[in-house]
Image (cartoon, rainbow, N blue to C red):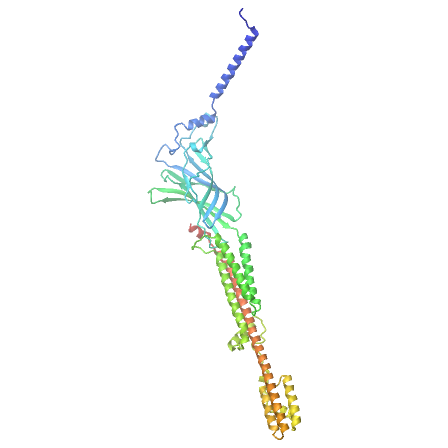
Length: 512
């Protein structure tokens, strides 16, 4: 028998088929529907060529406006003369092919489009220190209904910069970013700065440099290759170095080393520590010089201010070492029993009064020998006759004690001893053998006393000459000290304070 399906089952299967057919039709309808942006995007790119300029009249140029938003200064490489910056490069132009009626697209006035799909001006950085293969960020372009196109890619520029290190570390630098079309001349693409070409609202401060000012200038240059002019917009970035780091790490140590140089003049001239200290300070300055030279460009066009300062202080330190050797030599001249010249004595006495130093030995009072020479000969003879009586025994006893007393009192000299010997010879006439022996013994004693007294006088004279030359060395040291104080003080003040005040940033800009 033929099998018959129940009616409810047939009805259920038919309902499922109808429901599935409706869902399939709805899905097909949704697939065929397009959004307003899709329709607009498809409409704008119909017959569009991104390789040709977006103008219908080829005689008309495309006017491109350029502006930058400086966000950060990454690095300023003085040695390679390169500045690295992060910039939002704002570019705007009018594309005559991108015009539509917003009413036809439900009020859609701005469309974001991939930049690879539209024509873009070939804006490049003329003074780039990097290759041009990386290109710009593939940011979306904002297309307006009236044909205006705005494209703001983020770029990281490494540009050349003429670093002027004359006033380092108190220097200002003006670096430029020259932006323009590489292939299009001014008859095809005109470059203009925006109404507000520089935006610094998102700028992040740099730890080494302060941003002073950024401005732009439009130029038109004719190159030897082509008769047409090529416009460009050049942005100038004026930055100033922060000096706190260099003040604490370079300038202050140099000043303290200069003080050590001055301290060397207060050391005793007879030791060799003065020369040792000067050479140590000179070596420390050489280390600072090498540290600065490592960061400076190897150029002969500029001489850094800190280099001039270090060279000046090193020269004065070298001179202080030479003067230390000179004063040590002066200090040793007294051991050679050389008297101080009268002219030098007068000059040093005058300098000692100016520097409020007490001069004790360079212009001494008259020696005792000069005082004795000024005494009358009769007074001295009377003293000798008192020591040398009428009798021989009394004469020998009194003469011996008198001469010794004179020696102990420091009033005995060669003249008195000569007179005493002469009187002894006169009083003691040859009479007996005992007297002759006594005379011989007395003569030997007097000769010994003469030798002892002369040796003592020579020793005192030598010590006095040594003290004279030591005082000469001390006055010379004090004089050189004040000269170095004024020299180092004036040099530091002029080089590190006064001279940087006369720097002119406009002069730096003219050299670019």
